Image (cartoon, rainbow, N blue to C red; front, side):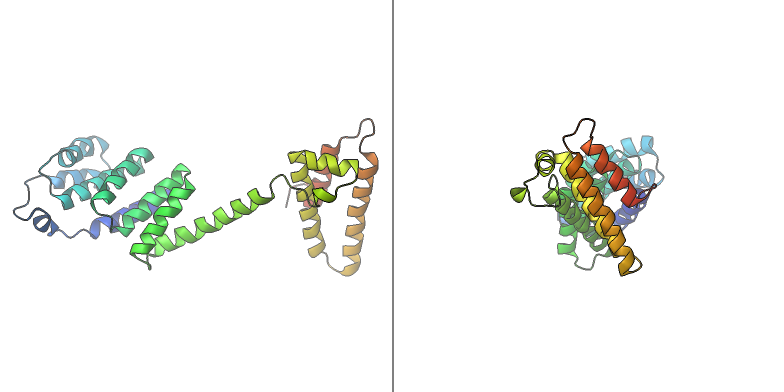
Length: 251
């Protein structure tokens, strides 16, 4: 629903930016007699059947003036988007942007569609294009900021993925070497370390923090001593420790 509302808002702004008298200037003479009203009305009424034929008659007509063609593409693209036909919506918006690459609202709209499709790089590129055209475009600014932060977070996670809380180059104990050699165990070790650091930060006083750190030290000591013994499950031990740090319901 959020994406549908965003798309409807952005498309309305894009259509309003196209001046009704631009057809004469684009053709250099009399505008072509093409019935764009039926296309726009059907799309606004969310009538897929009528809009399909009415908009196709405008879009596929060689006599359609450029401004009318852009309007029809935007209207049909918005209709496709409302009905979750994202690829078709992107195709119509892309064609409209080729005809007029100055439409900041439409770049933002297509960015939202890319985001819905899960293509973050193309989405952030379109939000950026909208802002280059209109640096004060509020929706594009909000979208670009939120997505940029998400990409930074993902990048940070990828940078430490498969790396434990300690330096593997200085690992000496067998358990440490085992953790370094296994991506899942390395991620678990890092999560345990981060969870313990959070618990210490949230401690009510120094005495409580000291007791909590003693629990972590005891866990590490048991882990070091237990690794390699029959029946000892390192992964389960680390998962149990993480669950205890985060609480039964998680953090």
